[in-house]
Image (cartoon, rainbow, N blue to C red; front, side):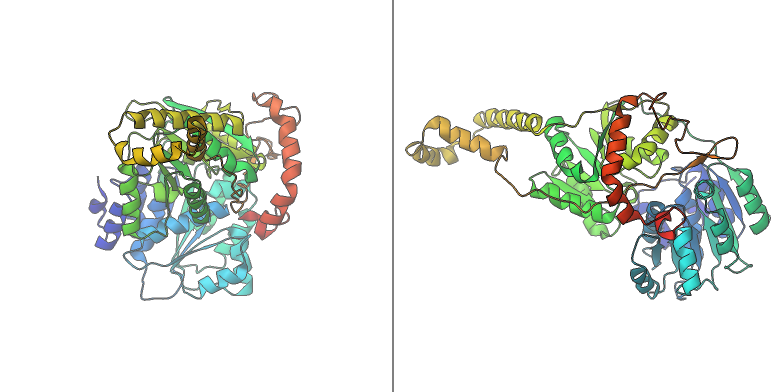
Length: 500
């Protein structure tokens, strides 16, 4: 089955093709048709199975671009997911002229109000900030035709069920409701029974997560250490071709610029690039004119290159399934691959979730030292020098070399050349804008309470997981980062700003 058989418009088919989608995933194949027909749908499928397009394609197909009203509303548990959904729907609707907007806590509400004045057709929002806008009357939902609850079970686990009910009571009764969830706890079932009308239920079996050919490693560090650690890793590991994942477009732009400033051949890819620019970046990457591609999850969708040697998660992925999708870019066509994930101290529970999902313990790498990186650069420079000696291009430089030899000792002259080639000159440190850590998704235990450690990991002695020796380091790191976290993510968990 392909997307054309779903009877989609040409503008939408063109966008789907340019985004790299070739055929519908099982959830898309079963959900898109009924959703376009206006039926309520419950889709039970794991994250990473294509749920965003499963509800996004019907939203875009049915949207009236001549109207300036909000017609589609997506409610997501975290700011990262809200942004990711808005970006993907913007890409899907680019040729139809769809305007999307992500609304979430932790961002200046005035900026969002200005965005709302541009009259988006579709809004992707976290519950707390959406309620804030509803109470301020800065968002009008009178003409909403479709409401999507994305990752409903996660919103339940994060304590948003009352907020969701309030939002559903604020939109027109005559509407379509699409609910997507990895699991179906009783509270979500009751929510569906109350707010949905004869929904079609679709259940997709969780796919097997295979990562056998990928050497997985992680490093613990503070947010501000990431760039220096990353450049040392590149020097030591010398990836033939690497994809580096950043959480936001700003991160991609800043990291790409910083790498290029340091002399690393890198280009960035995210949803704000024009198609021509995207094509240029991908052509350079495929032709190995650059060997480092920095990308967001959405922008990297559709990349199919078999000889990517390394994947670096500069920022932790939103969920375990996204982790598997990211690292699956390497280790293809029977080749081995390397995947390295940077984990800040507040994000340690996300690492546990990943290990639990893939049923594989990820080994920790020590932070590489500058001395190790320097030695690696020196060896790389020496190798390049030896290759240059075998080339037939030396004649163009011999006159200059003979002139310089009259003014300096040969050993000093060669040492100076090596120093320049290995970039040992003092430079001003490069600082990237900090990204807030992922929010912890708390899970309920069988008694109805909440486990702070998913999977039952100890919060005191670190036993039972294999990372016990790092527990004191975690705690010290959390204390160091507490001010930084609180100043970025808002106050309490019940505050809208802390929800996304």
